[in-house]
Length: 164
Image (tube, rainbow, N blue to C red):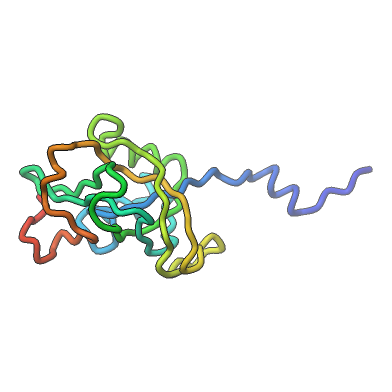
């Protein structure tokens, strides 16, 4: 007879869901107009890990008639952008792809981040100062490189570009 540990048995019966790290910098952050989508369980699971900022500068612009924030995929240009790092399950990742219009409006690419704090409460919370890799929704739009750039987005900020 083979002895099976309870931990192994739980791992076999309840396999760990694959979780993906995602960096949000705009309307999906806490306190922003679309944050409710991150906590809506019908969209999937999202666990806040930490505040973070990009290792390289990127242009974060607010544009279109709806004043949408876009991170332009132009590393080395702009500013180091502040945002939030999450762990999401496949269902939430699929939801975010659809919500962000990926790959037509935004592309999902990997980005290097520096963790600013460890406000998350789970075992996966990275320590401040650590470098992490995560997916980000960005866009290649050279014409927008002339726009003003920001290091942080707040829909209610003093930029007078109210999100609609």
